[in-house]
Length: 335
Image (cartoon, rainbow, N blue to C red; front, top):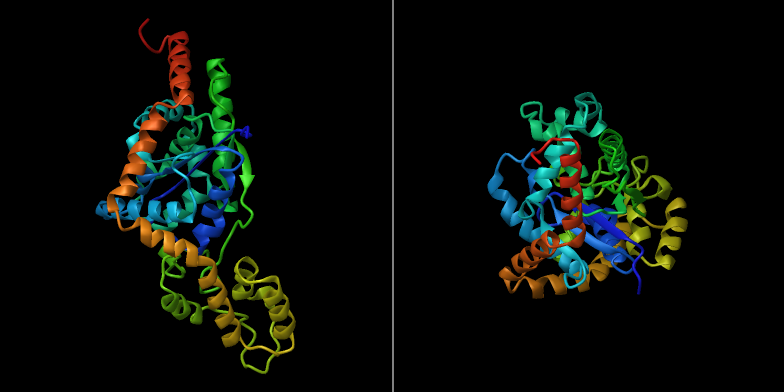
């Protein structure tokens, strides 16, 4: 089947993935393989801007890639690689940084959030993160980038950098990427307040055992106004119910929606149903993960092969040739 175009997306190596990663990105990555030529990258260089212990990058990369592959990424069709294994991205990052005003970078909401979270470590890489992200995308001439709501400003920034580059060089060599919003843009954690993530310690990991999953689900915050079992609840404000919609049957969702509102079902029973549905949904994933994990070298073989294919990719080769011509035209390199 003829593909619609090329998709690029990347994520930091954060280790074992959770429901937020799955619903916000991985599920979409797998689905996009049917219609697009996909390039997916584990962005270890980005991780260096915030990680204090760089020794975590390697094991986190292996665990993350294992989850992606177990979820359904097909390395024989999709290019999956580690960012630092394709050094051309740092070259393009340097060039694009020359076209990027510092004020634009420091005004981005995500930069301000990072400053709030790590005021002791505001490094150059943290400021230039969106430029490196732009290089990641444009290096492979990606037409489409799947993003969540928290990354929309970064993609619009990337589009601005591409337009500025074209205007100042007078050459149209980069592709201005289009945004593809994910179906499930934001997943709240077990606390029901903040986005699910390891930094908030409110995640439900995909690779947990069924028993571990049940234990974590029991801690989830539901309707904060429902203090007693006999009180009617409001599923519309309950984080557990929002996840039921993704993992439970339509019959269970309808029953919980109806019974919760008249106190016909309590939060404990609601969580038990969710645990059962979630474990059933994840069982094939966990079986594939367990099988793949028997050969620890397999993940690294996939990543190294992906880097080779990425480096030899015709789009990268073409961009390098076009980029050299642009620099020569601007008399920035010797003739």
